[in-house]
Length: 280
Image (cartoon, rainbow, N blue to C red; front, side, top):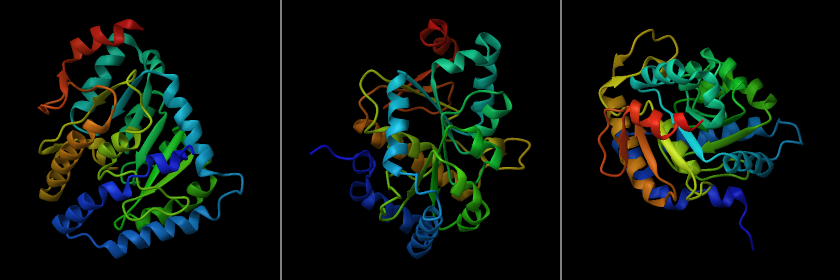
């Protein structure tokens, strides 16, 4: 029997131990996470009867199969520099040759530069309704700290067709748990069972240091120093990316990042241009 895409992507059982450690280290409230998941589920029930999770997952899976190179954009300080470099050297049309998957507020920078966003992975911290509709797919995460934002976006959640909803607790019929912790690393957890050995993933704006990119939060005009909790979250994200990398069939590269990793190659902008951009 062929497993459904939802079953292939779900990673709840495998990730439970990590989630328990996260709850303990950050003193999160499991009840609040369950409450947010249940609230999101109630919103989903208001969607058109034509909406079907497996159908949306199938459409996104087909999109992933259509291109070999996936650019994953985080909100780190190197995001703007990297995007500006690509625009200056190759122009915005070059982005159409790749899949563009953004972590939350990184989608604002792409929208501002009229770069296509194929999927935004968001807990609604860094986007407005403009980014919500700008992206072809929205992978929306519910957790205990964003219940108010789920309420604010309720009408958009109901209207938007290519919606995939996720949780960090036990999944429900129309809500998956694909593992991961922050918007950025959740993208890789989502892709783990959908990419092939023919794909290549390039991480842009993935900087796990004490400075946070301004696109991570709405209203920030400059990059800023992260709080103790934020830096701790980024450390977790890096650890999780290195862990899940072993379960992903294709190579993963950091682009123009200060992050040093034994798991991934860290390539310069010039090397990225020669190896990827100049081929299009």
